[in-house]
Length: 410
Image 1 (tube, one colour):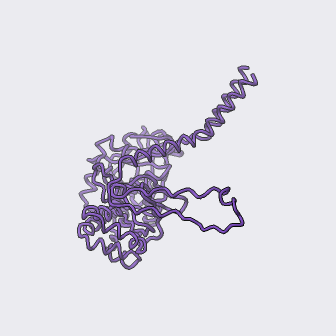
Image 2 (cartoon, one colour):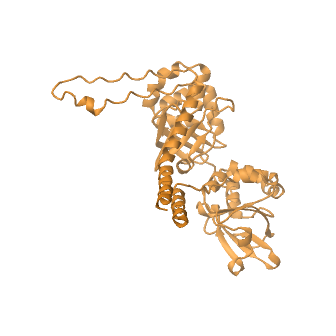
Image 3 (tube, one colour):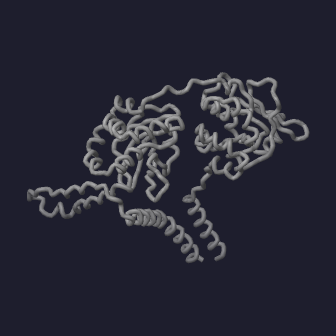
């Protein structure tokens, strides 16, 4: 009896384990935020958009440098592009925890960095040499540097076995190739670009709303992603737009911009809620959710869903994408009511010989510029909770059946 009962419980656990997903994600910004002595290094990982690249990779080693160690690099006043190259050299695309560093096969290793992996480094200059010396000292050097002051391993900051290692090194890795000036991205006029590529109506509204155009332009240097509705979608939306207050119109326009650069690959891999240029930190969040289904990327608010249909420009620090609908925030618009269900098949088959007119449900009234009621959010949460229960019920029932069967056999 005990054997059968144990077998039944074991089968239940094995069955359930198929539904458990373990996340291996990491967030380099949050990890370093717990260590104020690396705040400068951490800030520049964000400013150069390397933090997102680090978080997307499963196997990575970050060679962090203290605030004092960063000072000589910042004194060189490098361009943002050159600074990004230097910091990319400090991100190895392999796992080197403290134990691994002190047990190098043959005492040396060469690892590719993000500087090499992105194709920016000429030749093999993006490789980092690692040497395990006597007495346990481990040093690092860039491939293109023959003689330079040693850069040594100091300590481990955080390790996730075989996935992520964040370690401190004594100073910044020197590399003439990484520090070489790189051409800055060509200056792009956003509204002119959109006007020529099928988003003229949206671009004209930005120009007519000076604060909106200025906000978009001022964010380009630090990174900006814009979603411009195509003209057909924008013209259909204009009756709603005209009914908004001046503040509401500005918020809708700013709602189509994210204050960070996102390549199309980043949007496909980094799903989740994002803040927009309209986000002001109050109860009115003005955010939406990025989702993808394979190669298709959608932007979802609680009111509607838009799909990215094309790319106008995707060059760090600026990305502009076309979307097939205007993004409507719940702070200004109510979700449309669900359409009436279609008639049951039995009703259609009642009188096959009679000719009947089809009756279509009246289309829902267009959403107005009113504040969405708090109940909408509660309903959405209740709906999500119900969905979670629905997904959970099949495997819970199956597991219970297995356990009960085992007891009955006993």
